[in-house]
Image 1 (tube, rainbow, N blue to C red):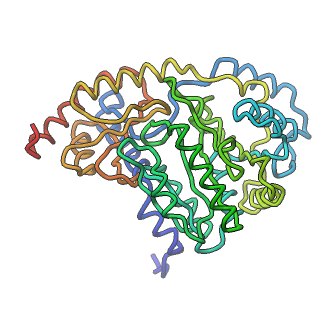
Image 2: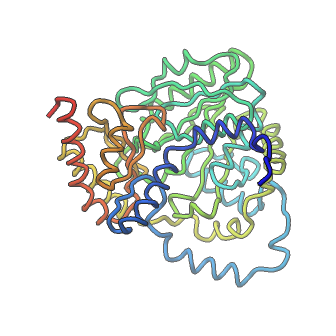
Image 3: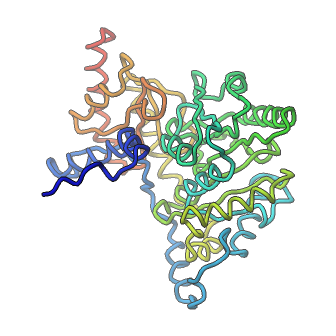
Length: 406
């Protein structure tokens, strides 16, 4: 074969490949082990892939909408989405966030929350501008920011994985354009305390007013409706004029593969029209063009439904009780479908190897910006948890003995 010369892959993408998500790496390792040992002998907690199916009415709506489809329903549309879908989202958001002036002009339909975050960052970032992330964070945020010339500034949360407001404010510079929060949080399952988010919102508005330039509080909240306790989910929109929401129906409707979500702009933000226009252009120029037309027509008929939260709650209780009985320590995961326990000795990669030897797949915490922990996704069948718990206990005992903690 002839020498093809230098790689066709850009330096940026080579770096991205090298730093690629630990989540996907462990997921692929799980597939490899399943081929060797059989699927029922591998216990894969690596991927946050919804395991509870969409509500049964969802399929009925799919069939109904497909039966009503006309040729014109599948053509190009305005980049921001169908007006009837945006009006439905706005009505739902008025109730959720307690702001009566949310309307369709606040809504941009997107290809999931990831698509929403990408068009938002593309709209606000000049090269070298900064985005503050709170660790632990969803690792893809790093790539979303870098995709558009931004720089990530990481601020650790406190010992209970709650926002450290003074540390966040100290990290703000003239180049800071947004602070991203994620509650319920991936990877910890923690719900940020509402009073902390509300105070953060007040500080964001104050800083923006003082410097005469926007500073956004961006809430990524695809797990908003997956809360299993009486924890109060805060609203970034209500907390400050510069609050923005990026979200999807991936988790609460179990539709991760359908890639449907939206960006919700704040009706109180004076330059909202400028931002709305930029999001529309970014949607087109990044190649999304518009969110999937079919799913936009489906949502208003079933989007108020939800997966059976009882199944996730039962899994949560099963794994939290089992891990704590084995000796693992973690803050209470009030939402989402993850737990984030600490590991003996602090070497999360080594501990993941211990678990992998027992055919249990988890993700090192360093992939989320917080070494010394592992992420466990309990979006699995209950029998997977039941059969894996003794293996979690064995690994903890082995690690504790190695580090003299047994």
